[in-house]
Length: 259
Figure (cartoon, one colour):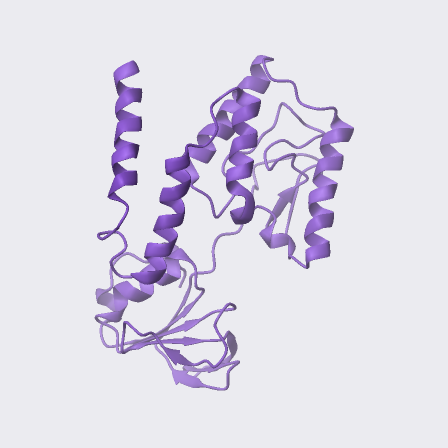
């Protein structure tokens, strides 16, 4: 099954479950079902050396390298040499972009989850400004980012913002692809901008004539990442950045008061 079908942990009562993946869905679901499942085995490409290892916060969660082979009798063999007899394998491996309704005569394609070519992850150079994509970028603060992308597109469509020439946009895309290839990054990580998402957001803001990302927002993002690593089961309910929360409240209060 895939994580998008997951709703509640009760169906996994007393079962041995393998979860493939180690990002947000895998982390949340594994913790959610651990209280009812007999065992939870996480298969991850980013597993540390020396697997299998036990999750320090849960007696019945085990972290492995990826699956080597799965057998019809329910046995799963992991690349670290360990094995488990399992009831369920759940894929928490993300989502694949698919646009069967979009006919571009081959101008825009999806290859290994890379949608492209797209200038700044939004505009196909050969079809801009008439076609654009919102929300392809991952490992970001989603909705503020999508709002900036939307404002950029609106500015371009209104004529207030002028895109570079097609050749210049295509060259920008080629440079990104070349950098990824040189770094050994697979195509499927094209829209993963975790390492530069604030820079990207600030670039969009400049294009739109909006203020840069607030410092409190950056600090809150990094504080949350640190808190999540330290308290994977409690980070949503316990935090140590009340001063930043207060600053965020003040920010939004000013917005509401000005409208």
